[in-house]
Image (tube, rainbow, N blue to C red; front, side, top):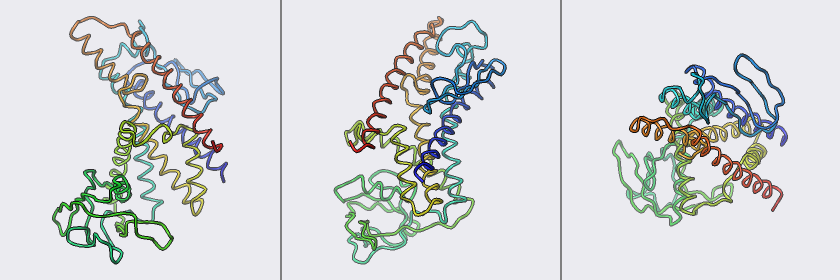
Length: 354
């Protein structure tokens, strides 16, 4: 089964790369920009075919891919070059890859909620274990619907435990809806000190399950996808504050290891596949958000450079040579590839028991 999950992970990675690059490719073609090559993966070509002006290729290193447009990183006299397209068209082309990744994650969640999950997790307290110190008017009560915890909105049921775990002092400010009214509960004492029947430590309450309907499916799908975006923000925040470090970061090798672990530890193959697809929904939206960060070499960095360049050219009425921006992106790409190599070696070392 390990081999099955490894193959599944590689295939899903390929799909995420493919849809991302297809977003660039489709919008470039639609905008009249010449695409010189559309490639899945990197390195020497395993297969390639020239069709019209575009070379289509499948390469041997299953990391990344690219949609090479004419004049993308340098000056070109070709009227159909990327740099000669209108600014709004270039913005759409650059943003299309991340948009496709986000839509892919959204679609995976929608399919899981519709066909795989037996019930939709709710955010309302269904039961509280006897003797819990927060079972009172100043704390939680059965029927309370979570709105926010410690200033962070509760989008899905899994947010409840995640947000409570992020505050180690055990005192939480919680906003709930009780009998149709919004209540602010302050300094609610909640810790993982209740031993469940399986021996695990929990907070001592159980949220409800929602009835399946078109509205609840659409609502949960959107909320879960937005929650994935928030999880990226929290992860980046933890890196800057020191709450998380390099050891907590993973590259492709580490992600594949996590996928295999998720699958193998599941109760059945079907549940394992569901868990893997759920993880890849998060990865798809994670890639969408991370790729839009204003860092050179990423699409977000290219968009930032495009806006700055367009503003300067508008003011000075002089065209900036795009080769300088190309140098900037190339330099940061080398740094990003080096960092990815470092993270990959770290992942492999950890998997080998280092």
